[in-house]
Image (cartoon, rainbow, N blue to C red; front, top):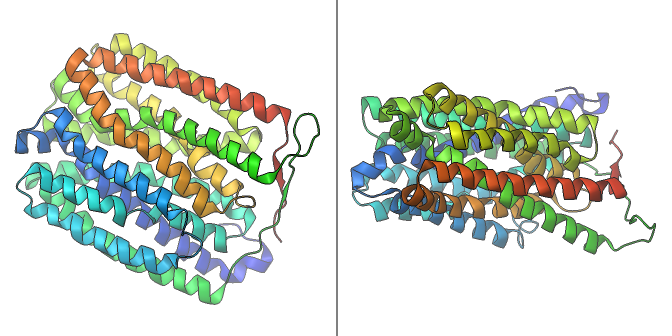
Length: 420
């Protein structure tokens, strides 16, 4: 972490907060993905099909998205440190109770209450970064936090594979439940120290509210329209992400005959694509400040690979692994720009926590409906139809990126002055 001279004395506080928030986010991703990672085992355990099995994810993400939208009204008034500390502690306790479920509805109930308990993790962390970190560290924060999904996914599938092979799927939740409690304690202490020793940073952002005809427009109108566009975009593109990550173990087992524990283990390759995607898109954003134009080549590549999977998904196991990794590399790169990079860059016009909560909520609504819809598609028409479905979604996302790029090329929305 390269700091300006006036901030170097606070380096340890910045690093501690970033590490603690990162660990908190990673573990929260891992514990909620345990259900997705082990659906291949949970389904037979309770004797339910894909559509019923997916209801747990739908419940979690619908509650999670609704709670985030509600939280936007109170995010400025809340003591986020205390709120996150209490709710995430309860999250660790309730997820640990998966050890004792004996009916599928009990697992759904635990997922549902955790849609509330985990509501402030992403938006809260982003809000706290926006509160304490200087402008020039925003790219670092975006890069680091965007890898959390990959590492969390890797941990979820890796630990799940271990416990399925050695004990049973329930032990995964106990393991991550304990980690959740430990990480939130670390985060609470780190935030308290930076609040006491560093304090809030001054934000200096110049906004240019001028349209292509040089007629001033209101700040509220522009922010509202931009948030609506990014929100719809996030909702659409996230469909591809969750459609793939939720069902890859089932895909490997049903199409290529890979045993359950090995299919979960092989799925560990997916985080490779997820991990490097954000770094790639962040690099592209550094070269081009038309952030929507940056997404066009990424989505063209994703659509091409998704289209190939329609015809080649059952051709070989190697292609069945490589192509989802490529797709997730590109899609996660797009999601990084929409859900992490832009909220941090726009903090001068809309509070980072609020924009993060809104955009993440809309993305989570797609995460809520995708497992059920994709399960119906697979059970009714097969895996070929599933890949047609995600290809269509990819094309829609590409069209949105082109629309956004054309709009951005006609106006200079804002320029940012660095602090210091």
